[in-house]
Image 1 (cartoon, rainbow, N blue to C red):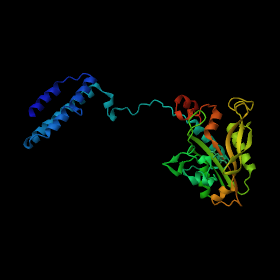
Image 2 (image 1 turned 90 degrees about the vertical axis):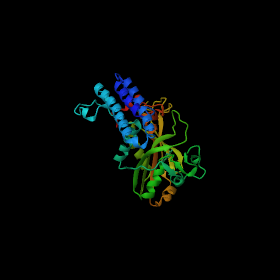
Image 3 (image 1 turned 90 degrees about the horizontal axis):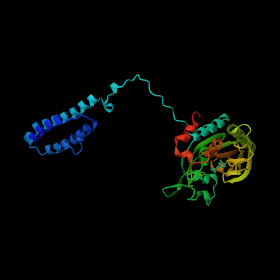
Image 4 (image 1 turned 45 degrees about the vertical axis):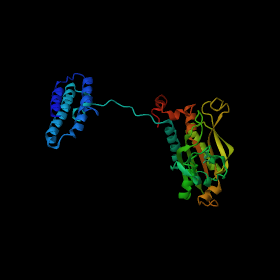
Length: 340
Ligand code: DAH
Protein backbone atom coordinates (compact mmCIF):
# COMPACT_ATOMS: atom_id res chain seq x y z
CA UNK A 1 0.00 0.00 0.00
CA UNK A 2 2.91 2.33 0.72
CA UNK A 3 4.18 2.04 -2.85
CA UNK A 4 0.76 2.75 -4.16
CA UNK A 5 0.51 5.85 -1.98
CA UNK A 6 3.87 7.13 -3.15
CA UNK A 7 3.02 6.83 -6.82
CA UNK A 8 -0.35 8.49 -6.15
CA UNK A 9 1.50 11.47 -4.64
CA UNK A 10 3.34 11.91 -7.91
CA UNK A 11 0.19 11.43 -9.95
CA UNK A 12 -1.64 14.10 -7.92
CA UNK A 13 1.17 16.59 -8.41
CA UNK A 14 1.52 15.85 -12.13
CA UNK A 15 -2.13 16.01 -13.14
CA UNK A 16 -2.75 19.18 -15.05
CA UNK A 17 -5.75 21.23 -13.99
CA UNK A 18 -6.38 24.11 -16.37
CA UNK A 19 -10.15 24.38 -16.59
CA UNK A 20 -13.14 24.10 -14.32
CA UNK A 21 -14.10 20.88 -16.07
CA UNK A 22 -10.68 19.38 -15.41
CA UNK A 23 -10.94 20.41 -11.78
CA UNK A 24 -14.30 18.70 -11.51
CA UNK A 25 -12.94 15.51 -13.08
CA UNK A 26 -9.96 15.63 -10.71
CA UNK A 27 -12.24 16.10 -7.75
CA UNK A 28 -14.52 13.23 -8.69
CA UNK A 29 -11.60 10.94 -9.52
CA UNK A 30 -9.98 11.41 -6.11
CA UNK A 31 -12.68 12.60 -3.73
CA UNK A 32 -15.81 11.10 -5.29
CA UNK A 33 -17.90 8.59 -3.39
CA UNK A 34 -16.38 5.76 -5.37
CA UNK A 35 -13.10 7.62 -5.96
CA UNK A 36 -9.47 6.82 -5.16
CA UNK A 37 -9.53 8.14 -1.59
CA UNK A 38 -12.64 6.18 -0.68
CA UNK A 39 -10.98 3.01 -2.00
CA UNK A 40 -7.80 3.71 -0.06
CA UNK A 41 -9.62 4.26 3.21
CA UNK A 42 -11.42 0.99 2.61
CA UNK A 43 -8.10 -0.76 1.97
CA UNK A 44 -6.60 0.90 5.05
CA UNK A 45 -8.88 -1.23 7.23
CA UNK A 46 -6.93 -4.30 6.17
CA UNK A 47 -3.45 -2.86 6.88
CA UNK A 48 -1.67 -4.88 9.64
CA UNK A 49 -1.76 -3.23 13.03
CA UNK A 50 1.98 -2.39 13.28
CA UNK A 51 1.89 -0.52 9.91
CA UNK A 52 -1.30 1.42 10.63
CA UNK A 53 0.38 4.49 12.14
CA UNK A 54 2.80 5.08 9.30
CA UNK A 55 0.40 4.23 6.47
CA UNK A 56 -2.34 6.30 8.09
CA UNK A 57 -0.14 9.37 8.19
CA UNK A 58 0.84 9.06 4.53
CA UNK A 59 -2.77 8.47 3.54
CA UNK A 60 -3.78 11.66 5.37
CA UNK A 61 -0.98 13.60 3.70
CA UNK A 62 -2.21 12.41 0.33
CA UNK A 63 -5.72 13.50 1.20
CA UNK A 64 -4.41 16.96 2.09
CA UNK A 65 -2.30 17.14 -1.07
CA UNK A 66 -5.40 16.46 -3.16
CA UNK A 67 -7.35 19.16 -1.34
CA UNK A 68 -4.56 21.69 -1.66
CA UNK A 69 -4.41 21.19 -5.45
CA UNK A 70 -8.15 21.93 -5.57
CA UNK A 71 -7.74 24.98 -3.32
CA UNK A 72 -4.82 26.26 -5.37
CA UNK A 73 -6.83 26.15 -8.59
CA UNK A 74 -9.86 27.82 -7.00
CA UNK A 75 -7.76 30.61 -5.58
CA UNK A 76 -5.97 31.26 -8.86
CA UNK A 77 -9.14 31.28 -10.92
CA UNK A 78 -10.95 33.36 -8.28
CA UNK A 79 -14.03 31.21 -8.62
CA UNK A 80 -16.87 33.27 -7.10
CA UNK A 81 -18.61 30.35 -5.35
CA UNK A 82 -15.59 29.92 -3.18
CA UNK A 83 -15.06 33.50 -2.02
CA UNK A 84 -15.28 33.93 1.71
CA UNK A 85 -17.52 36.46 3.39
CA UNK A 86 -14.64 38.86 3.97
CA UNK A 87 -14.24 39.25 0.18
CA UNK A 88 -17.65 40.94 -0.09
CA UNK A 89 -17.86 44.68 -0.21
CA UNK A 90 -20.55 45.22 2.35
CA UNK A 91 -20.81 48.91 1.55
CA UNK A 92 -21.93 48.34 -2.05
CA UNK A 93 -25.53 49.49 -2.66
CA UNK A 94 -27.89 46.62 -3.42
CA UNK A 95 -30.16 46.53 -6.44
CA UNK A 96 -33.69 47.57 -5.50
CA UNK A 97 -36.11 44.69 -5.25
CA UNK A 98 -39.71 45.67 -5.63
CA UNK A 99 -41.95 44.14 -2.95
CA UNK A 100 -44.64 41.80 -4.26
CA UNK A 101 -48.11 43.30 -4.54
CA UNK A 102 -50.80 42.29 -2.09
CA UNK A 103 -53.17 39.59 -3.31
CA UNK A 104 -56.49 41.02 -4.55
CA UNK A 105 -58.43 38.89 -2.05
CA UNK A 106 -56.35 40.34 0.79
CA UNK A 107 -56.89 43.86 -0.54
CA UNK A 108 -60.67 43.42 -0.54
CA UNK A 109 -60.66 41.60 2.81
CA UNK A 110 -58.77 44.53 4.31
CA UNK A 111 -61.26 46.98 2.80
CA UNK A 112 -64.17 45.02 4.30
CA UNK A 113 -62.44 44.97 7.69
CA UNK A 114 -61.79 48.72 7.38
CA UNK A 115 -65.44 49.53 6.67
CA UNK A 116 -66.79 47.50 9.59
CA UNK A 117 -64.06 48.70 11.94
CA UNK A 118 -65.29 52.23 11.34
CA UNK A 119 -68.72 51.04 12.51
CA UNK A 120 -67.18 49.73 15.73
CA UNK A 121 -67.01 46.04 14.79
CA UNK A 122 -64.19 43.93 16.17
CA UNK A 123 -62.46 41.28 14.05
CA UNK A 124 -62.00 37.65 15.07
CA UNK A 125 -60.81 34.46 13.43
CA UNK A 126 -61.27 30.85 14.41
CA UNK A 127 -60.47 27.31 13.35
CA UNK A 128 -60.87 25.90 9.84
CA UNK A 129 -61.33 22.32 11.09
CA UNK A 130 -64.68 22.28 12.82
CA UNK A 131 -67.02 19.89 14.54
CA UNK A 132 -70.57 19.20 13.52
CA UNK A 133 -71.98 21.25 16.40
CA UNK A 134 -70.36 24.56 15.40
CA UNK A 135 -70.65 24.14 11.64
CA UNK A 136 -74.19 22.71 11.51
CA UNK A 137 -76.12 21.66 14.62
CA UNK A 138 -75.86 24.84 16.70
CA UNK A 139 -76.73 26.80 13.56
CA UNK A 140 -80.05 25.01 13.44
CA UNK A 141 -79.33 22.78 10.45
CA UNK A 142 -81.81 19.89 10.50
CA UNK A 143 -80.31 16.42 10.80
CA UNK A 144 -81.03 15.55 7.16
CA UNK A 145 -80.03 18.93 5.65
CA UNK A 146 -78.26 18.40 2.28
CA UNK A 147 -75.36 20.73 3.24
CA UNK A 148 -74.20 18.05 5.70
CA UNK A 149 -73.95 15.64 2.83
CA UNK A 150 -70.60 14.07 1.95
CA UNK A 151 -70.95 15.63 -1.47
CA UNK A 152 -70.67 19.16 -0.12
CA UNK A 153 -68.55 18.79 2.98
CA UNK A 154 -65.00 17.55 3.40
CA UNK A 155 -64.96 15.28 6.43
CA UNK A 156 -61.78 14.32 8.27
CA UNK A 157 -60.68 10.68 8.20
CA UNK A 158 -64.14 9.24 7.95
CA UNK A 159 -65.12 10.84 11.26
CA UNK A 160 -68.51 12.38 10.53
CA UNK A 161 -68.17 14.71 13.51
CA UNK A 162 -65.11 16.59 12.19
CA UNK A 163 -65.06 18.53 8.92
CA UNK A 164 -63.44 21.46 7.15
CA UNK A 165 -65.82 24.31 7.85
CA UNK A 166 -68.20 24.98 4.97
CA UNK A 167 -68.83 28.59 6.02
CA UNK A 168 -67.61 31.17 8.53
CA UNK A 169 -71.00 31.06 10.29
CA UNK A 170 -69.34 28.55 12.64
CA UNK A 171 -67.43 31.48 14.16
CA UNK A 172 -70.76 33.08 15.17
CA UNK A 173 -71.32 30.09 17.46
CA UNK A 174 -67.77 30.10 18.82
CA UNK A 175 -68.08 33.83 19.59
CA UNK A 176 -71.52 33.65 21.24
CA UNK A 177 -70.48 30.68 23.35
CA UNK A 178 -67.62 32.73 24.78
CA UNK A 179 -69.21 36.20 25.01
CA UNK A 180 -72.46 37.65 26.20
CA UNK A 181 -73.95 40.60 24.22
CA UNK A 182 -73.36 43.26 23.17
CA UNK A 183 -71.47 41.54 20.33
CA UNK A 184 -70.51 43.37 17.18
CA UNK A 185 -67.90 41.45 15.20
CA UNK A 186 -66.83 40.27 11.79
CA UNK A 187 -65.09 36.99 11.07
CA UNK A 188 -63.00 36.67 7.91
CA UNK A 189 -61.68 33.27 6.89
CA UNK A 190 -61.22 30.40 4.49
CA UNK A 191 -63.99 27.91 3.86
CA UNK A 192 -64.10 24.58 2.05
CA UNK A 193 -66.66 22.80 -0.09
CA UNK A 194 -66.47 19.78 -2.26
CA UNK A 195 -67.12 21.61 -5.54
CA UNK A 196 -65.78 20.91 -8.99
CA UNK A 197 -63.32 23.70 -9.81
CA UNK A 198 -64.52 26.01 -12.59
CA UNK A 199 -64.60 29.71 -13.49
CA UNK A 200 -67.43 30.20 -10.99
CA UNK A 201 -66.70 27.67 -8.22
CA UNK A 202 -63.73 26.49 -6.17
CA UNK A 203 -63.28 24.02 -3.33
CA UNK A 204 -61.51 26.68 -1.23
CA UNK A 205 -62.83 30.20 -0.97
CA UNK A 206 -63.08 33.10 1.49
CA UNK A 207 -65.94 34.61 3.42
CA UNK A 208 -66.50 37.40 5.89
CA UNK A 209 -69.22 36.77 8.43
CA UNK A 210 -70.85 39.56 10.43
CA UNK A 211 -72.72 39.35 13.73
CA UNK A 212 -74.44 41.98 15.83
CA UNK A 213 -76.31 40.93 18.98
CA UNK A 214 -77.71 43.33 21.55
CA UNK A 215 -80.98 44.54 23.07
CA UNK A 216 -83.37 45.95 20.44
CA UNK A 217 -81.36 45.03 17.35
CA UNK A 218 -83.82 45.03 14.45
CA UNK A 219 -83.99 44.31 10.74
CA UNK A 220 -83.79 48.08 10.18
CA UNK A 221 -80.28 48.04 11.73
CA UNK A 222 -79.26 45.21 9.45
CA UNK A 223 -80.48 47.05 6.38
CA UNK A 224 -78.76 50.32 7.22
CA UNK A 225 -75.51 48.55 8.10
CA UNK A 226 -75.50 46.73 4.77
CA UNK A 227 -76.42 49.88 2.83
CA UNK A 228 -73.51 51.72 4.44
CA UNK A 229 -71.22 48.81 3.61
CA UNK A 230 -72.34 48.66 -0.04
CA UNK A 231 -71.82 52.39 -0.58
CA UNK A 232 -68.38 52.31 1.03
CA UNK A 233 -67.38 49.28 -0.99
CA UNK A 234 -68.79 50.06 -4.43
CA UNK A 235 -69.31 53.83 -4.37
CA UNK A 236 -71.86 56.33 -3.10
CA UNK A 237 -74.35 55.77 -5.92
CA UNK A 238 -74.74 52.09 -5.07
CA UNK A 239 -78.22 50.88 -4.24
CA UNK A 240 -79.17 47.68 -2.42
CA UNK A 241 -82.11 45.30 -2.76
CA UNK A 242 -83.10 42.63 -0.22
CA UNK A 243 -84.87 39.50 -1.43
CA UNK A 244 -86.48 36.97 0.93
CA UNK A 245 -84.47 33.76 1.24
CA UNK A 246 -83.90 30.85 3.60
CA UNK A 247 -81.03 29.96 5.90
CA UNK A 248 -81.52 27.63 8.90
CA UNK A 249 -79.80 30.05 11.30
CA UNK A 250 -81.68 33.25 10.47
CA UNK A 251 -85.36 34.12 10.55
CA UNK A 252 -86.33 36.02 8.49
CA UNK A 253 -83.51 35.52 5.99
CA UNK A 254 -82.58 37.52 2.95
CA UNK A 255 -80.16 37.81 0.09
CA UNK A 256 -78.77 41.18 -0.80
CA UNK A 257 -78.13 42.46 -4.30
CA UNK A 258 -76.22 45.62 -5.14
CA UNK A 259 -76.87 47.70 -8.23
CA UNK A 260 -74.38 46.56 -10.86
CA UNK A 261 -71.34 48.80 -10.56
CA UNK A 262 -70.20 47.92 -14.06
CA UNK A 263 -73.19 49.07 -16.13
CA UNK A 264 -74.68 51.29 -13.41
CA UNK A 265 -77.87 49.24 -13.45
CA UNK A 266 -78.52 49.45 -17.20
CA UNK A 267 -77.77 45.76 -17.78
CA UNK A 268 -74.59 43.93 -18.85
CA UNK A 269 -73.21 40.40 -18.94
CA UNK A 270 -71.85 40.64 -15.37
CA UNK A 271 -75.33 41.29 -13.94
CA UNK A 272 -76.90 39.04 -16.59
CA UNK A 273 -78.85 42.08 -17.86
CA UNK A 274 -80.80 42.46 -14.61
CA UNK A 275 -78.93 45.51 -13.27
CA UNK A 276 -78.38 43.70 -9.92
CA UNK A 277 -75.77 41.33 -8.52
CA UNK A 278 -76.12 39.19 -5.42
CA UNK A 279 -73.32 39.65 -2.90
CA UNK A 280 -74.41 38.23 0.45
CA UNK A 281 -76.85 36.30 2.63
CA UNK A 282 -78.24 37.79 5.83
CA UNK A 283 -81.05 37.78 8.36
CA UNK A 284 -82.11 38.05 11.97
CA UNK A 285 -80.36 35.46 14.13
CA UNK A 286 -82.84 32.66 14.83
CA UNK A 287 -83.74 32.64 18.56
CA UNK A 288 -82.92 28.92 18.65
CA UNK A 289 -79.33 29.74 17.67
CA UNK A 290 -79.04 32.30 20.48
CA UNK A 291 -80.38 29.73 22.95
CA UNK A 292 -77.88 27.11 21.67
CA UNK A 293 -75.17 29.52 22.81
CA UNK A 294 -76.80 30.32 26.14
CA UNK A 295 -77.89 33.81 25.13
CA UNK A 296 -81.36 34.73 26.38
CA UNK A 297 -83.51 35.24 23.27
CA UNK A 298 -86.19 36.95 25.38
CA UNK A 299 -83.76 39.78 26.07
CA UNK A 300 -81.48 39.86 23.03
CA UNK A 301 -81.92 39.92 19.28
CA UNK A 302 -79.30 40.01 16.56
CA UNK A 303 -78.58 40.10 12.88
CA UNK A 304 -75.98 38.23 10.85
CA UNK A 305 -74.63 38.28 7.35
CA UNK A 306 -72.10 36.37 5.30
CA UNK A 307 -70.39 37.41 2.10
CA UNK A 308 -67.96 35.80 -0.33
CA UNK A 309 -64.73 37.75 -0.74
CA UNK A 310 -64.06 36.24 -4.20
CA UNK A 311 -67.42 37.40 -5.47
CA UNK A 312 -66.96 40.97 -4.26
CA UNK A 313 -63.42 41.09 -5.64
CA UNK A 314 -64.59 39.81 -9.03
CA UNK A 315 -67.22 42.52 -9.17
CA UNK A 316 -64.93 45.28 -8.03
CA UNK A 317 -62.12 44.42 -10.44
CA UNK A 318 -64.20 42.79 -13.19
CA UNK A 319 -62.44 39.45 -12.88
CA UNK A 320 -64.27 36.77 -14.83
CA UNK A 321 -62.53 33.58 -13.71
CA UNK A 322 -62.28 32.51 -10.06
CA UNK A 323 -59.31 30.26 -10.79
CA UNK A 324 -57.07 33.29 -11.34
CA UNK A 325 -57.08 33.90 -7.58
CA UNK A 326 -55.37 30.58 -6.90
CA UNK A 327 -52.87 30.29 -9.75
CA UNK A 328 -50.35 32.88 -8.50
CA UNK A 329 -49.63 34.06 -12.04
CA UNK A 330 -47.52 37.20 -11.63
CA UNK A 331 -49.06 38.77 -14.75
CA UNK A 332 -52.36 38.75 -12.89
CA UNK A 333 -51.06 39.63 -9.42
CA UNK A 334 -48.85 42.51 -10.60
CA UNK A 335 -51.93 44.40 -11.73
CA UNK A 336 -52.73 45.05 -8.07
CA UNK A 337 -49.53 46.92 -7.32
CA UNK A 338 -49.91 49.75 -4.89
CA UNK A 339 -53.27 48.66 -3.43
CA UNK A 340 -53.50 47.62 0.21
N1 DAH B 1 -73.31 30.88 5.69
C1 DAH B 1 -74.01 31.24 4.46
C2 DAH B 1 -73.33 30.58 3.28
O1 DAH B 1 -72.22 30.21 3.37
C3 DAH B 1 -74.03 32.72 4.27
C4 DAH B 1 -74.86 33.44 5.29
C5 DAH B 1 -76.20 33.64 5.07
C6 DAH B 1 -74.31 33.89 6.46
C7 DAH B 1 -76.98 34.30 5.99
C8 DAH B 1 -75.09 34.56 7.42
C9 DAH B 1 -76.44 34.75 7.15
O2 DAH B 1 -74.60 35.02 8.55
O3 DAH B 1 -77.20 35.41 8.07
O4 DAH B 1 -73.95 30.45 2.26
